[in-house]
Image (cartoon, rainbow, N blue to C red; front, side, top):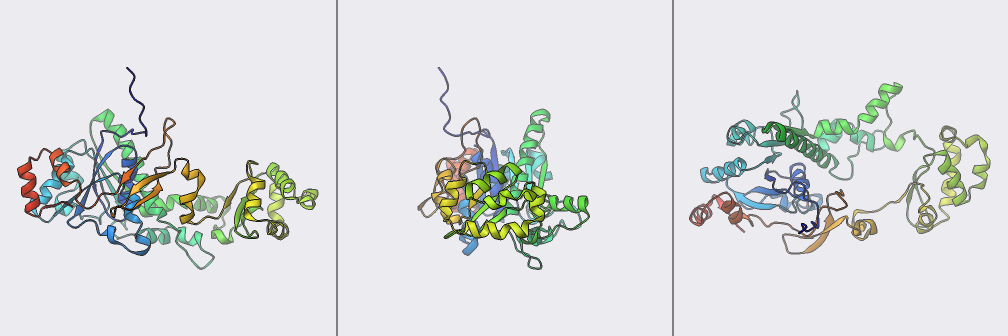
Length: 397
């Protein structure tokens, strides 16, 4: 009898994660691993992670990066609560943490202490900096973007601007996941875990490495993106009758097609700009003509002409518009029950594996919701569980 086909890929099924995290970078590691099928036990303080209560731009952090996890609330200042945390780590395959350097060490939850009990443990620390002169500094996404040159490259000259999402937190989490998966593969061969460290600053440096390489190759500093010299003449946002659209013409064959589709007969007739580099040098002459013509169309009309042609284009969308995006509706969003009970949809892990997409219905855990199940899974009996909860070392929702 054949095995039933799984509705979603779960390559990490059977892998248990102990997660000591807050904000974005650490929780994003756990969310990716949970989306790939791992069991993630999120250890929160009594009352729940304060990230749950952030306002403004922080109000989306918790629901986005904590789906599909179990929650247990522990008082790590009590011997009993700390003992439970150590039990969770002792029975975990992976531990993820992103607190300030030394914070977990002082509680006896360092890699050295835990690996002595659980040698197979893979311990992932998400930090501001890798070892070096800055390693004890406190960092945030903004700190890394400013120090690492990303804010300089994003804003106009003299006006550094952070990227419009927590791009370094999330990318740093992704590098942490890469390190974890590599450590899991090595553990298959050696039977031993190891410590993995990912960081905000070095992640930023990796992302702007292309601009460092540009300087190494040309001897000229890279200009901020709004003032850059583009590698293509048509590679910009254009105004239409209603809404803006990005268009990129990145080859000579696409230039011919672009001119034909939008009626630029006079530009195509100019043989002096048939080659890409010629067009780049003539960009100041070409762009006003293109902008004037594009502005006579609506965005929908431009998209209708460019759809299926191979010419890169994109409507300039707002995040709230993505809820109704037909591409995401084809499998890129998963239903989510927030801790208030409200229903929404949020982006799932952006992968396809063996023809299947990760994700599915996800419930955001209320603080301590899974306390009894987690403790029972560790081998605690009902009396021990009741004593821990009544004594305040463990809280349940």
